[in-house]
Image (tube, rainbow, N blue to C red; front, side, top):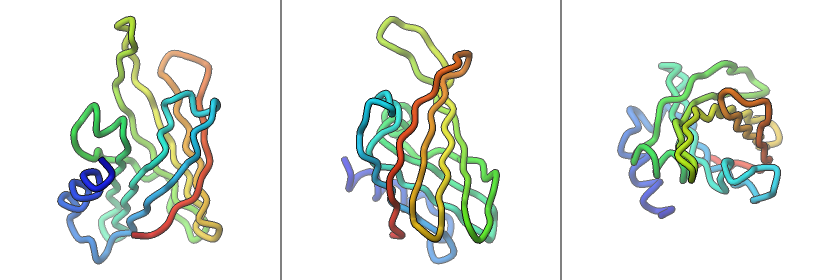
Length: 131
């Protein structure tokens, strides 16, 4: 799965030479609730301002990386957000909203998942490397 995720991700990159591409690893914990997965690939093209996100959930639902919104891009951090429509085992649907905060100096990442219409959220922290 991992090779397929990266191969597909790189096939949709508009200009890999100009883009920041991160592979982020997050340990699985109860606080992630199963919604924050263990591997994310995030891409941000500074020249166009466009971003993509991918993980196991995105690939399961969409079969391809999805567009992410850049809400902050500074020397210290990059903040991306995206949504994935999910259905649980009982057929209930919700839009799961994700927010990734990447700290450039420490290469740390925090990813939070918040189900639409609910007060709870799920979060995990990990590290990223440029690929």
